[in-house]
Amino acid sequence: MEAVMIHSLSKTYPSGKQALKDLSLSIGGGEVFGFLGPNGAGKTTTVKLLTGVLTPTAGSCSVMGIDPARQPEKAHLVSGIVTEHAQMYDNLTGMENLLFYAAAFGLPRQEGKARAESLLRELDLTDAKDRRLASYSTGMRQRLSLARALIHRPDVLFLDEPTSGLDPESAQNVNQMIHGLARREGITVFLCTHQLRYAQEICTRYGLIEQGSLLAAGTLEELRGRLFAAKTLRIRAANVLGNPNLTECKLKRRRDDEFEAEIRENEEIPALIRTLVEGGGDIYSVSLEEPSLEDIYFALTDKRNDSRDNRKGEAR
Ligand SMILES: Nc1ncnc2c1ncn2[C@@H]1O[C@H](COP(=O)(O)OP(=O)(O)O)[C@@H](O)[C@H]1O
Ligand SMILES: [Mg+2]
View 1 (cartoon, rainbow, N blue to C red):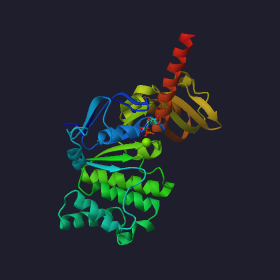
View 2: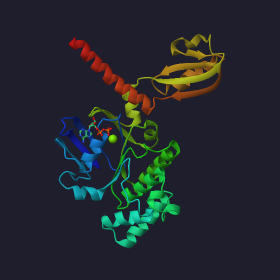
View 3: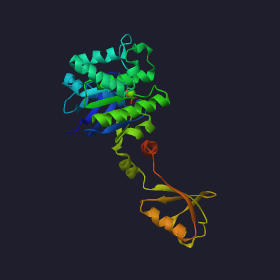
View 4: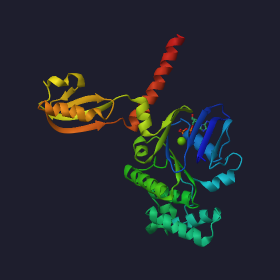
């Protein structure tokens, strides 16, 4: 059974705004899935549908085999949710907040306390556990929110922009903690974000959404392969020009001792380096530059804009 299944899901708000259009996706157990897209793309709408806050206009979805629209309580037991602004009690301490949610999920008091202690330790909040939430920084609040979401050992953790209000250091921290917890607890993570660099650090697979439609889904390798035929090899070297065997390898000079070659397969690298060295070249460094998640994201959105422009052209 897949942890999350989304089948031809559409959502039109009462205002008439169609926020999701025929979205289909499936996420396997233990995946850290990055759901990426600009503001207004439909990420939060998707999470609300998956957590039973909204019901679909068409299509269906399930979390651990449970339809959140039909069985919201059962769906809550297997899901944990962290949103941008954590809703917890300012007048309670960190520990009291966690005990409150543990009780709400029906955990026996001793078990809830042990679970809370262990999460507070993991999230570096032990020293602050007896302080009222009102005195917590935004980063500490988000960490406590993560602890709250995990208190009942959910199978799937939904994170909707969990680091967007944080400074880079706290964001990095929270990100690393999500990564560590996901691995140790074997939990499936559904992470919505537009912070591509953080996503690239922790996600195992991605889905890109824009204007309610899925543009692509896959691992970084799959998306790279689908979008970019060539990779760039950067070489710092001397005495490589004038090599008679170089003609076919398309070595382009960028600066004094910096060169670039477009390659398709990694297997081309040793042959190219051998040619350079055998021709009397001195190699100082070689690095393979692969497209980042950001490159993929922009390539996909450009493509979409191109095809839209073409359609406009045809209509004229
Ligand atoms: N309650 C609502 N009523 C009407 N339109 C909404 C509502 N919530 C969101 N939208 C619209 O639906 C689209 C998708 O929003 P959302 O799912 O919040 O995107 P994201 O989380 O990717 O930024 C946006 O155009 C947004 O303005
Ligand atoms: Mg959102």
